[in-house]
Image (cartoon, rainbow, N blue to C red; front, side, top):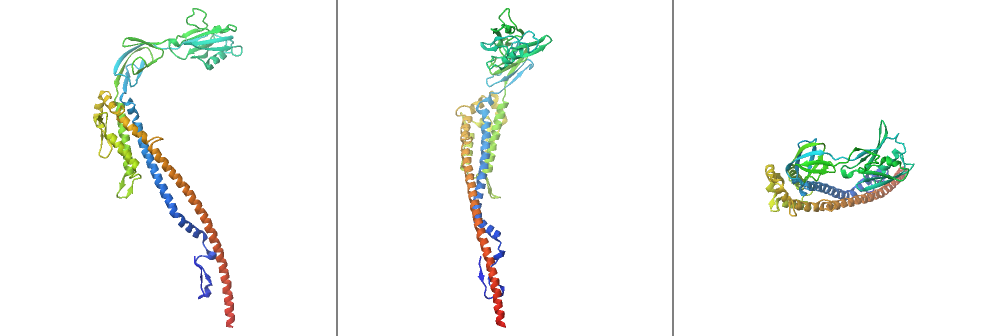
Length: 464
């Protein structure tokens, strides 16, 4: 800001200043000076932050695509996709069945002659639930496991004994309830597990002897206070004429790979067949998720010559390495065969194409060929799985890159805070300086006006 002394045109004032003095626009001057100082540094921080956020977003896309690919490999890697079976029951009212990977194609005629049930027994009738039954020790035993309940005058009522049974921490498998009939209140005990071996016994000792009203021993010919409502029994059935039994109505040990759920008495034929649909679905999903990764990779690394816009990760060594490794594995061989042998071929653009007819033919042996291709230490599952584990997850390469960029953004945030603080300090300093200058210029202009007046007086006096 220049200040000049004008002696040639005294009538215009001895001191002049463009835009200063009492008319100085301090705020605008300060803002412009601070902006000139801040802009280069701000642009650098903004540019670096934008680039880091773009890479962070791109890494997130890659990580999501590879995680999806890893998930798509799950049922292929454990072999469950190639060992699926369909199971049908000719009479679902009698039973239903489900299969695991160990099931074998075939049919089985099953006749259910008895369902498994739990023991249920009732006491005689009492006036109501508050009726005192007796005192002493009540022992309930199921399969060799027993609990002993101490009953006295404070907990000897029908309701209190019910609560003591249900709340006992060492209850061996018996629940109690009170059923009110026309003749009074009954304590009903039920086993919580079906099967002949899971029946219970009840005995009492000590006290006033009143607890004997709840005794029960199926082997005793007399002295039972409880009467049986429903006996404990095993399920009885035949499989193709072979007799079998089970403690429960859900039977998983009768036929390899099958679980039978018995519902009622009768006969049903269970048919088991190979089901290639799960394998087809799993491999289709694998192809689609791989192609999704390829699409994301191509988008992030492309260069548009028309718009001159480059992808967010063009030239990125990590991403190029991942794509190259995946292409090498997918286009290679495993256990002496290639993916093309089952209808999955690598295209020129890097994507995969699935030939459903060829895949169906490959699955015609029950999934053995396809399973062999992916299974084992050298199968495609092992090869892909090992690489995916290195790339994704908490300890993966992508997580390391993400953490590094996140730290970079944090550092840029610190730089931004420091820059803002410096500019705030600079703004305050400039404001103080220009305010002082404005004050000085105002005083100088006042002095200039006074001197001009005195000069005019002297001039006029000399003319007289």
